[in-house]
Amino acid sequence: MFAKLTLLLSTLPLALGHSLVADIWANGVHYNGWDPNTAGPYRVDTPGWYTTNIGGSPLYPIDANQLQIICARGGSNANFTAPVAAGSDVRLRWWQVNVAWPESHHGPVIDYIAPCNGPCSRVDPTTLKFVKLAQRGWINNSTYQEGYWASDELIADDGSWNVRIPVDLAPGEYVLRHEIIALHVAFTGTGAYSPSGAEFYPQCVNLNVTGSGTRSVVGGVDARELYRGDKPGLTLDIHATNDHSGYPIPGPPVWTGALAARQLAA
Ligand SMILES: [Cu+2]
Image (cartoon, rainbow, N blue to C red; front, top):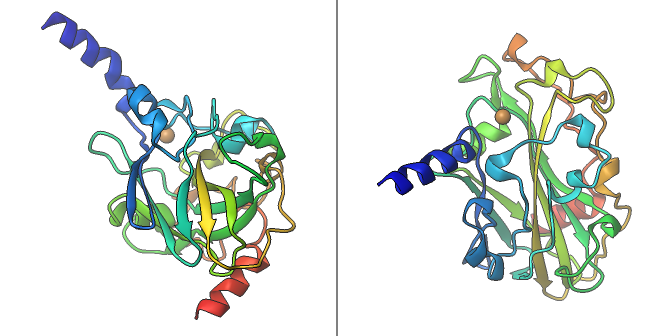
């Protein structure tokens, strides 16, 4: 009884406030995400990169040019790589205990992809060059004082987000970098690499893209070059109004290859 209570008390703080990518679906197959609270058994069968991002402890602009921005704090390669057909959706579900994503943490949801040029289980994350596959930011002025954001859409869809793999993407292994940026304290940011401000929650996933596509990823960048705390979209006070029309989603524009693939699929 006492041991159980101690265990409960010692694990409780990890669960509060945030969530993590607890479930991943690719080709209709379900995988557990990497969960540092229940390490061990998950390590062998998840395409989700391992992190020490316990309970979703955020990264701030101070981390934006550091190793941890690439695939989260303590990010290291997942051993497993999930097959996924080009043109299909990967689904990621943020969940912990009974929380999808904290409602207060409004902000954009962004997805990037980088070729591993070999097995993603062994790729050096500092060599990954990411392009932006998709992005969604402020949606409308409904529901909240801050308006309705991509993160709210995610919460409304069972904590989940679908990412379309470009239909003509060349087969091979890729790291998907899925990310929520929470803006609830973005107004406290004071500069390019401020210790407070916008909160970054990246999660990397190993994918083995199959198909007969021929489009290669070009023009990607090191994830340490994606953000600076003083760039547009990271310093606003989202509480000041529910109308954030024209909100500039951080990072580079969506990759032209992803846009072209959408045209092909339409
Ligand atoms: Cu938080």
